[in-house]
Length: 256
Image (tube, rainbow, N blue to C red):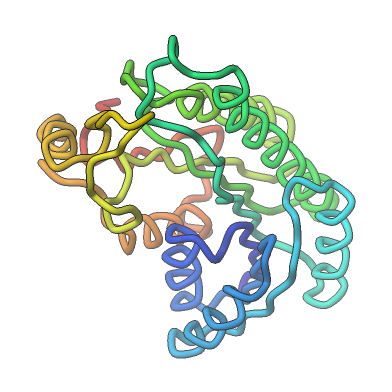
């Protein structure tokens, strides 16, 4: 019976999280820059027991986010969970020395802007009520030295740094802040060679993916359904003592 706003709900990760939340009985408010993909997905969610409502919201627009949050609060009586999973438009498969400044900065700018906008908006609302959970998703390049990830690793590191600070500020007011750190789920992208300027980079071909898989302790990647299920656990009261934390879902690629 918790109310959750999911930004980027039409993406692969967003859908997996929404399905898990729906099965657990959450009231879902799905937000995306384009409402059309959300409409069909909202119908699908009904078979999981969901009660989704959709809205066209640009998560990089502070006024739009505030307006949607206010409308959701008025309709639902409050928001318990805010989870931002929007895409970062990152360019990968190219060495930094061959990358333009614009391509490097784009995911960093998007990540820091959108997470700051949605997380702080939620925090203002949640601290007034004395409860709530703010969530995000990052990936292993935030911690590991991996080549060819462009600005994505920097973006993930920036998200984690900002959320640690937020957790310290809102924790005494009853609000938790956590982020899932994933090794990536191949179900969410095509496994094929990536060409950069006409040259194969080897970023996501079968050989590269297998080398990453072998670096994990479980010798596999997290499934999208598992990402959704862990998200539901972290958002629930069962994870009450957990805040300011990266939730490790890397299948052992990172060992804490």
